[in-house]
Amino acid sequence: MKGSNSKQNKAQNLRLVLSQIVSLGPISRVEIARNTHLTKQTITNMVEELLEANLVIELGVKKEGSVGKPSKMLSLNKDAAYTFAFKINEKDISAGLFSLNGEQLNSLNTTYKEDKLINQIQFLFETLLTACQLQKTQLLGLGLSFNNAQERSIESYKKSKYLQSELSHLFNLPVALETTASACAAYHMLHAEARQLHSFIYIHLGDVVEASVVYDRQILLGQNGLTGAIGELFVTPETDKKTAELGRLNDFVSLNSLKKFIGKSGCNTESLIQYYTNHPDKITPWFDMAAEPMRIAIHTLESLLNCQTIIIGGDINSWFLDKFITLLRPFIPSISQFGDRHVVRLIKTPDVDHISLKGIATLPLHAALNDENMKTLSLSPLLNLNKIQNLIYT
Image (cartoon, rainbow, N blue to C red):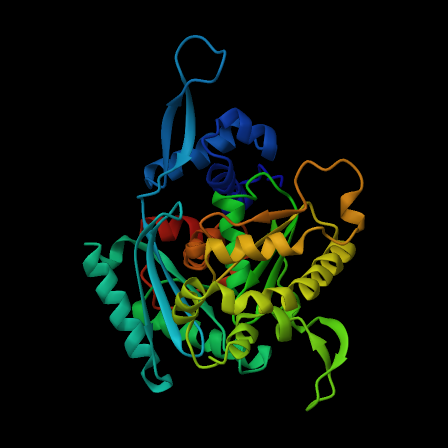
């Protein structure tokens, strides 16, 4: 992305420089200038503001083969502020407190009743702050992902928007909202497997199967914020006996389909992980059933979008993901296998056990990196912004 040296574009330039430092750091001022086409003076001004706010720090990094003093490199100060993550589905709340680079300080999980949701969120918020010995003034913001697999996507989305506004007013903090898949894609772009990628798809195996499409390092939201509902793809010609609908990906690959398969439809994600960890043989037939529909879905995504790669993760553990990926190979031939490939077709998410909360915690920082991302952020009109929030959000 290129910037503008016009004084009127200060906010855009600052977000652009910050984006370079977050995703490519440690990085020199010269490299930022080369990537953004901003002048030396513009970059100096932007960097000085970021240094003054303590959001960015200078490191003396000696490059291989260089002589003399180490050059000054710019890096994100991971402890300049902290972010909260709330992942909420129809029965559970997962909450975590994180550094700006995605390092988890602490996390908690609990169940909730619908009329007590806000009370439970507030309890988790206060408990984690106390446990980590932090003050609310040290927070950059909250990340939020809400999904009820029993509702239509649009209804769940409307509820999540209402909850976002409610939490912004309750805590007097910025709240960034995305699907879990988009949140995980943001984490991969800033801190993990996609730092050097321009286009990719992230697939998330949860109660429903979600995807996030990233093009030119921008998450595509669609006209109603629901882009990526790949669980709705038809993947078999078989029809449901009750509805006469064709078989959808969610019917075969989602964690809800696994819960139904083992006769535990009411269990939460934590209980499900415990079950298949203790009884791997009981879910082997489900893997065999799920593999081919997922292979079809991957082929469909590759044929339509032809991104650099697909990254896969979910509300699962490493054993589950390794087992599933093994059954997906060999992949169905597609246009993605042709030409010069610099990245493999499918990438496994490292530390998949924690990817959901890591991704959601990334959202407050990700929102600040360009104007489009800011659309995911809710700022209460009465919000008193601290120094860092005022710098990157206004």
